[in-house]
Length: 105
Image 1 (tube, rainbow, N blue to C red):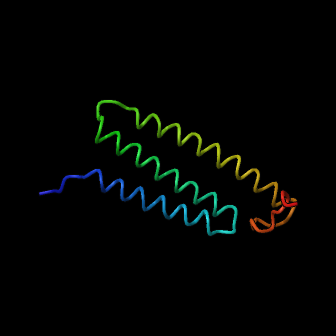
Image 2: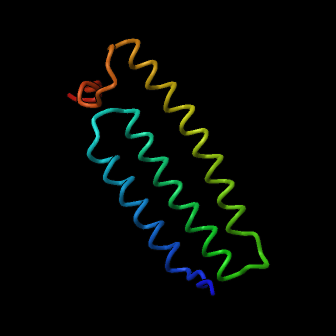
Image 3: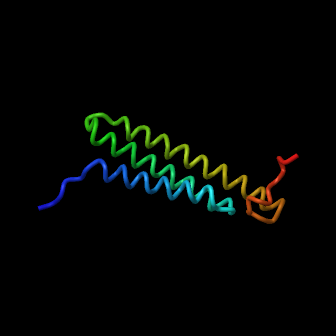
């Protein structure tokens, strides 16, 4: 006899992933690790959107449509972010975020 899936399982998983991503984004000094942490947070949002859609309105596809938009924005963010990081690496020879102080007075 199997157990039924509860929406709270997905919400707890999503909250845990978001917390891990937030910790990684705030504590890392490597720009690529920060981008990966942001992607983990966006994955948590997608899990939440799809799970809430499945359990609240299973006949509509609103959650899946929003998840596709989030995936699209995440792909554009990674492409643009990596291009910026590569440009910074070529000029400064590092991806350490503490070394990027161009905006300081």
